[in-house]
Image (cartoon, rainbow, N blue to C red; front, side):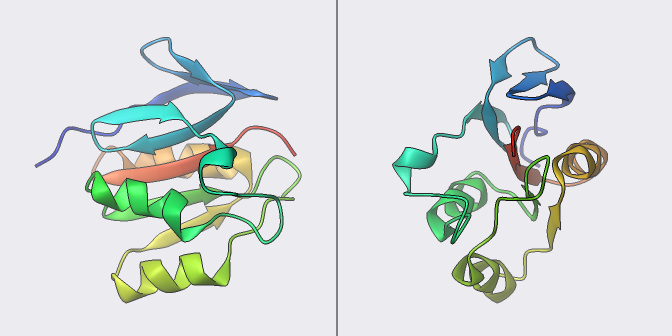
Length: 122
C-alpha cells in the first residue's frame, strides 16, 4: 500500500497547516505527499471550478477516494468534466464546505488512499 496521505493539523482563513508543520494557502494532498495548490497551473477559477487536471494529479499519486473543498463560503465550484472523470474511474468523491472537507479527508486518510483539494478561503 502507498504511504498515507498527510494529516491536516488545523486550518484557518488563508492557511492549511499540516501535521508536519508545513503550511499552504490552498492544499493539494495525496498518498505520500502534499503541496501548494496553485490554481494558475490548470486555469482553475471559482467558476467553472476545479479542473480535471487538478484531480488527475491526485489520481496519479494513487488516490482511491477524493475530497474536494468548495471553500469556506462554498464559492468554489467543480467542473462537470472533473466529476465525470472521477465517476469513469470509479473513484468516490466528496464535495464539501472547507470545514467538512478537512474533517472528512482526515477521517478517510486513516483507512484509504485519500486525496484532497482544500480551498482555504471563500
